[in-house]
Length: 378
Image (tube, rainbow, N blue to C red; front, side, top):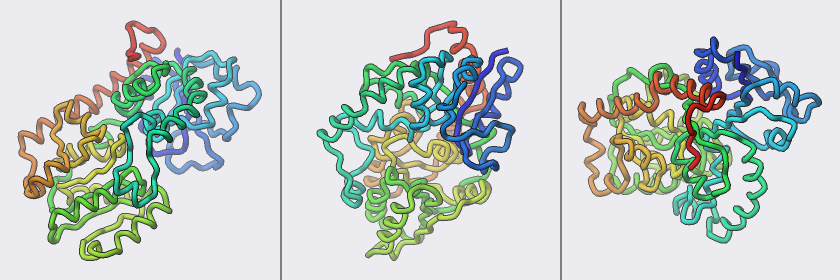
């Protein structure tokens, strides 16, 4: 039987990975190894091995890793550099990226920025061509290390193509894979019923909250509640944003800050009140939330340069841009038609449904170990 070893942090997505690979336990034996300094894990609820941060520096680690057919990294950070440098480890490596672990490979692209202008101004973010050139030069050694990885599965294939555009020497081949599926993890049966707005998904600058709030100022809203999730992210950024929300005309708006972690049921109850969703990310972010909201029937708005927006448009999914909204404020009051909702749901199931996820996992088992056909590398 084939043997895979998974490495991950104590994060909520890992249960979904475990469930997916366990469906193929007659073909592959999957061992999950979790980095943690605690003997009790918070998010992971299955039997696994807990190791310390310096695991890849331990004596004899090569013998252990070489006994597996595949090493799977869930979110790559600096601790894995010791693994990538170790020439005694011969096992193939698959990196399943989350976005935050690989956007440094995209951020140095010319004429690309994950921050909008008002967010840059308010946070003092410098983002110019010279800085990009310097960062890209400094990244050369790290990119060279990444070429020890055989396969790479980012959240969207568009991310892979942007990395290849920015670093033509990037060698890992592309494989598709998703954490979870619509039927089991993201689908909510609650109908959309209300007139509230969901704005952003976390207390991180990549939400471009300042630019979203500028759009809100132009909409002449009346009694709409605006939910702003801030339960996770960066405390310093959250405090700064909260101070901004207390200024001037913002005081008149019905902002509801979601600062505490909510159960999935409670969070879905809030989502069901929001037929309109304002996302400000230029990079891929909050994809699980977004596909769930689109499936429920919400209208999701993006900046036109958003990678996620362009991905959805290219797949035929009905989403909206702020250009459309500012030209026609009545869009907020117009629900998705049943025909458009059904088409969106069908496309989403073809991309994030249970069946396609099973196919992706099966392809990892077959492609990585048997190579029946060519895997995309450009």
